[in-house]
Image 1: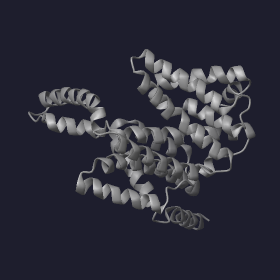
Image 2 (image 1 turned 90 degrees about the vertical axis):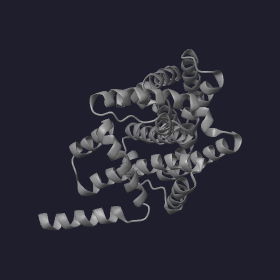
Image 3 (image 1 turned 180 degrees about the horizontal axis):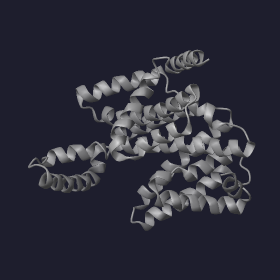
Length: 317
């Protein structure tokens, strides 16, 4: 890890090449789209050495846009996606460099995500309609899967309306902005981790374990979730995906805090992450972590874990 970080920050040329390389890798592998953003955060924490963070962000953004254009995306979508992936890490990197904590960055990023969603719903006459081609494509894929299952097990087959509704739950503004939120926080976390390695100090662990959305955001989330169910309000339905992403991250922080407080081994944490990577178990693990993250804003869960650890220590002693 240290050698990679040192190479990427050895000179202006290595930063430029690294930004282009990481942007290319982020484009090719969906789950590591945060890589160029992490480099931008690292350079912000280093004070713009050996290259300014905004220059690195520009290189990464242009590279990402170029790959999207080559894949057939239009100029506007290519630029918007690149901006969404690179600019938020640039902003949060500067907040961290000025003494802000990861918890503050997490709260500000969640508020910014809600603000972007509000602008989308105010500006566009039909926000869900933008995603209709993708919904139709996904509905067709779900129809193929449903047909295969019906042939094997039963004669049940969902209607076209049910397929479109299921697809719309996964392809919408809320999911897209939620992914950008997660990308931003992961980029900030990895940037902090890399900076800590260079300074030989633990910067990420204590800050990540302490992140919380706070009761104000949790209250807003509860109100919007109720509005989504009761009123079928498009904005509220999209917002609940953003809060699911935010509380999932907080649930992960709680999981890491539990490991630290209870003194659990690395194997336990690896198994927990493994459950999130397997689709069948992720369906259960993801919402459970989101619920835990939501409750963490109201209940003293970390204090209770510390009490359990103290009791176990007394019994063991």
